[in-house]
Length: 156
Image (tube, rainbow, N blue to C red; front, side, top):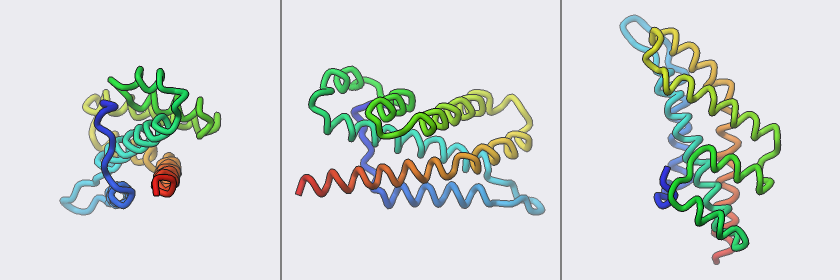
């Protein structure tokens, strides 16, 4: 994700996407209807990366002593950079960092090999991943919301 394309979605928009992903995760197979678990998983992964990147960039914006790091991140800032920065800045602990790394590995496994298995098999596998990491995604959304709230309070 380009560092220049900072997220302009509001927290309400982010929460709306989170709810939409949740609705897709609860869709059940009915006669003639498909499940939407792959869509839920893909939306969850995109949402988590967007939240992490936004959070990381907001943290770097507030740290004048990290201007060299911010300059380095200027061209490209993605999931890896964001979780590394959040960990190094003490925003997330080792356990949360490891969970984010585990999610990234599972995300990569399915996104890069989406068409390598029968879609019904993939549907059930990604639904399990979705459910396993749902609370992590919600936690990161809430952390971003608090950070955005602190930024707007300090700028008034």
